[in-house]
Length: 235
Image 1 (tube, rainbow, N blue to C red):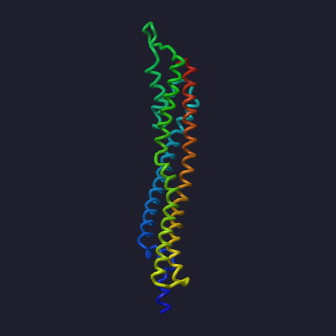
Image 2: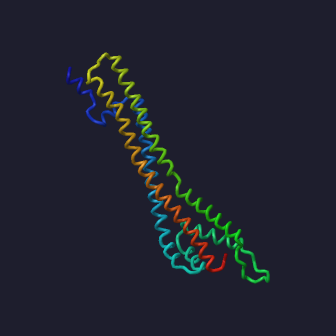
């Protein structure tokens, strides 16, 4: 009789999962889904940031050596599209659309006024924000998963403890052997929830830091574009 009772007691995590009650299994299933989403976002963002950095590195290196706007425009056409090339293209487009033609009908165009330069800055800021929003997609989802997962694990733990005590009350057994499996089943929800939340929080903090650094680099690039235009007398 003792062998039959002890053999029914889960001896490892796998048996705890397979023998768990339905509410616990539902919570664990939701946590597994959140884990897949979390790792999918982490992998996707890692690839996206790596591609962006690789495509921008050569353009920024050549841009730092350029002395004329035409050189940068030619370089931007040769290089792969990146947030920096798109910001530069938006600045050139604004200049072409805004600079008034000379009064004598020649191709020479007058410099931009102070208000037009300010408008150019607003345009570059808008383009910078759009690029930042594009690169930052799904990153808040990691923060949400990192915050929600422990709460779901706590819910599974509470439901498991309630189920365990109801089982004890029904069977009338109050020894440690009757209580321990139910409590262990309840606590496994918390363990799984932490396993989901920790990578999500790490990923969120890492990518948020990269995104803030990227935002600063893009704003600085916009200022350098305006400075280059000013040296040429275009503004």
